[in-house]
Image (tube, one colour):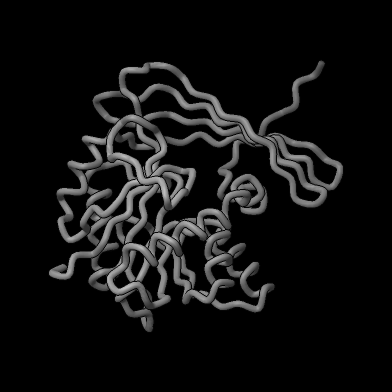
Length: 270
């Protein structure tokens, strides 16, 4: 059987297919954000939101539908264009712009004092150095009002495992089917970088094609993440969860599970 050719392409340049892959848990994530905000924000009022690395705008749309004043940025122009179009099609407004997590600045006319900031599903790991990661956290803290919340989700690394990991899932939207295969190699313990490869098998309008993206993530275990957070003391640890997004089931901040979701609060003195 002839093997299908694979196009080397950044999956962020094809936001529709990316969005189809990740859209399934959007409502559950939004439910958690609102429940945790009601539980932990001081005071639990205000509806101004910032989303660093907002991607295809799936959560921007969902939170705007729920009445939040949504602001967000992403480093990929294709993603920002897609997100703006979907919000406009829904008759909703959000302030979205191109920017980078480690150096973002609020555009003219956008004030800080956000009630909620979130960066979920390991996007934070695109920051390859401790300096960039700490700078991102400092900028997030600067945009939050005292008592506001920052939600940070990422996948922890077991450095002792030393094995490759593979995930596969299938998602559909109308006539489009996307099969996603992600392969992760063990990290380099010195650089703390891990190599990843994602292959998408896309069937769209009766045509099937393959595209592949390769990139690197910075890795963390619980101790390394705690060390990073100590560099930004104005963000206080409140609670820890996992990617089941169950507000009734907080977890320990340790390495006993891989998918970590931190709830951090801007200190009153910050």
